[in-house]
Image (cartoon, rainbow, N blue to C red):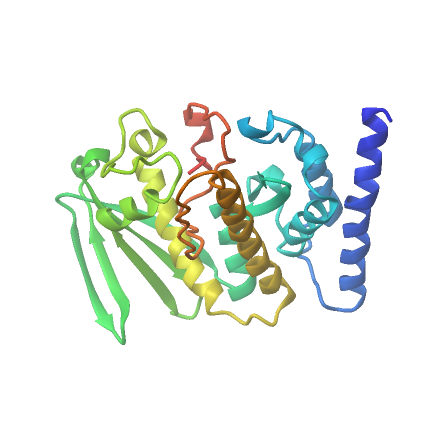
Length: 299
């Protein structure tokens, strides 16, 4: 069977099935998309992207569509569409773990889902540097009335003290999340590129060169995560938002177990998925980040 025929078969068993399922959700009134979101366009973009994705070095960099199960491909597409996301807008990524394809939101995607679910008006973040004046109050365990005064001369990526994100829910309802530099580094340390004994960013890495953007990204992810985790799980959107995170974690743990199957000791720590860190595809070579990629750095 030719490669084109194989792709046509996979498309029929995945994209077409998902399209029919989404139509069913819409007809039953279980799913409503914003006027500017087209499920068909999102799946077309995803299908083109999927044809370029390959497995890691251990699997010989094979095409993901040849390796991954049709069920996992269909489920990852469904998770993407139900959340109203489009990979062409850098709102999420398809990642291969063994024979499982998973869809993981980027922080752009997390912000969009948070706005859709909570009705948030805006989500913004800022960085705190040495010399800045920061004052806030704690009321019932929540940060309120945060005031941040900054001088232009304080802006220095090597003198970051922390960052904060603000979710404006309208009518004076504002949620603020604050992270110190130690908390930011703890979040970054979960990524595969971070060494076992590493305590600060390595020179020349994305987290070193674009530290301000990384700091804002991490605190936004944490703020949104708290809102999503506390929202109504009964909605179809939240079911798939949680499902995509769970499947990604399970697939990653299974792949780690397989990779360590021949070792004397298998020590896998099963912990909650850390959404402050974007997972890179296992064993894929890293590419140097450029200023053009600042909108959505890989970690």
